Every structure is written in C-alpha cells, then in structure tokens.
Image (cartoon, rainbow, N blue to C red; front, side):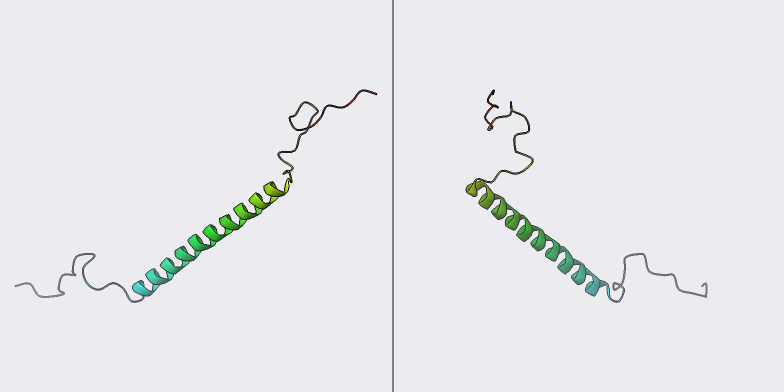
Length: 78
C-alpha cells in the first residue's frame, strides 16, 4: 500500500468556498437594482416625451431645417 498524502477530491466536489453564497446574493441584488432603475428611468423618459408631444413642443432634432421640410411654410417673396 502506498503511503503519503491522500488524493485530493475531484474539482467541484465539496462545499463551496466561504462567502460564495453571500457574494451570489449581493450580485443578484445589484442586478435586480440595475433592472429596476432602468425600468423606472425609461418609464420616466417616456412620460416626459409623451407630455412634450401632447403640449405641441417639437424636439430640435425633428424641427424643420429648410423651407422644403414639412411643417414649415415656405418663405413669402417680398
């Protein structure tokens, strides 16, 4: 019989390292917070955009740039 050190258990066997459960819980909470903040922020942005559209305000990106753009009357000749 060989004597010496016993062979180590295969990888993945045995209890997880200390603190692994705590780390997983903290990571899950952080991911959940990111999802909630993103959801709330996008809803607030949508509400603001809807409010602006209902009041008739035009975003600068959508404003007519030239006389041929829709929504702007052509310049009257003098």
